[in-house]
Amino acid sequence: NAGVMQNPRHLVRRRGQEARLRCSPMKGHSHVYWYRQLPEEGLKFMVYLQKENIIDESGMPKERFSAEFPKEGPSILRIQQVVRGDSAAYFCASSLGTSHTYEQYFGPGTRLTVT
Amino acid sequence: GQQVMQIPQYQHVQEGEDFTTYCNSSTTLSNIQWYKQRPGGHPVFLIQLVKSGEVKKQKRLTFQFGEAKKNSSLHITATQTTDVGTYFCAGRPTGANNLFFGTGTRLTVIP
Image 1 (cartoon, rainbow over the protein chains, first blue to last red):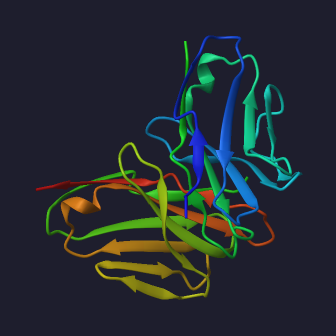
Image 2 (cartoon, helix red, strand yellow):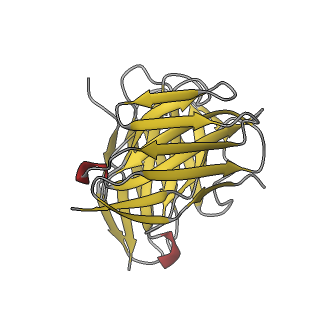
């Protein structure tokens, strides 16, 4: 049973370009969470999605960032017009149910570098 | 806003010594989870605590949830080099949809 998959593992973008990060949850999981981790820091919640719905996006910047989890295919975190401050590791996690009941399984992360 | 703080931020111990990290929330939590992240890796779930005053053990690891459900601790007995990593607590405030991760405690074990 494959774990949470994320791609790409490393992504380099120039300032002003777009970054698209993909996350395929574990089989059978319909809840997806995105987190950002700056070097030497903790995990900052960004957004929580279920299939085709955004449940909580309170941690996501209102501009330039968007997330989706379509009926078919992976969840996508999209960052438009990237800036140097967007450089971080972005982790996706999935769970069988809501986070208060089930543990979250994390993917390997996408390390985004903005030059 | 909701905050989950952990102390200490860093801890260096000699192999064989004990280690404890503490997690404190500004609000009451429905449950708390603990994760471990190895250097360069991703967080891996360790355990979940739900009941007030709950204590759970996993081999050399002991997890506690405070009576008021606002704090938690992780204690490792006789650390080994394989314990190296950052330990995060993650709590869900009552009524909230998502987990709030603590700031993490980075453990270094000196052989």
